[in-house]
Length: 309
Image (cartoon, rainbow, N blue to C red):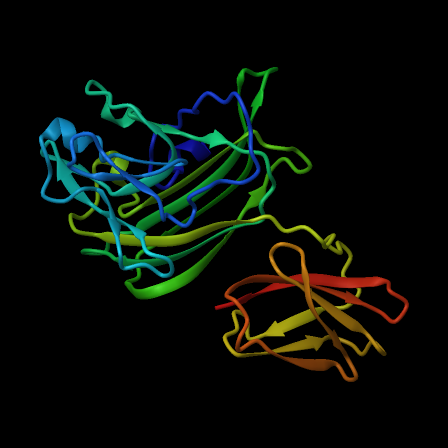
């Protein structure tokens, strides 16, 4: 079952939802609150961590999640470090939801999910990762909707990644969601990051560190995917950093390539005089962009996307 292979391995318990929203605040991780004990800081809603366990332990040499000024942008980012609490291995983890410590069953302390209505296509974030002894970071996101007929949550969309490579400079990661139930509005979302993907089984390596900043849910609107591709458009290279070339697999006289940002705003239009055309993206903001190819009569021929780093 899919729930048994979720990266963090956490038991998935949904937070009761009485309202919904299509945007989430504090995705840039700029606002934090000091705990009553003063032993740690906690990122504000919608984020939770296992840091409250530090209170029960009377402090810890390393808190699982810390606010750091080593940020990609803004003032702060989140640093997750696999550590020991109560003499037990604890992966650094950041997730949307709640935390209610359960001494009898610590794995049940994490409650996942916050109210959300929206159909994002991608989860984007900037990260650095410093694994110890082959450890792996884990990231996942799930969109869910309560099904009254079955009295359980249906999975609307899902995405996950594990990665073992050291990444010592902030890099953009673009995680595309796969939709299992299309044309359905979810009512909640789970997003989770962890410095050790097998943390639930108390497995991982002490000292593995994951830094995360500038988290974004990309809600792409503005282009309807062209399901029947009459012309193949290939962006080269993809991802791109400074210059990008688009190649058609056949000539289309006076074809236009409309390019949109992640919010569906048209950024530029290119005209094909041959089967290739060039685009300078040196000063473009990092992220996912989408394109739509039209012929001279305005008929949609193809669509796709590319990434700017």
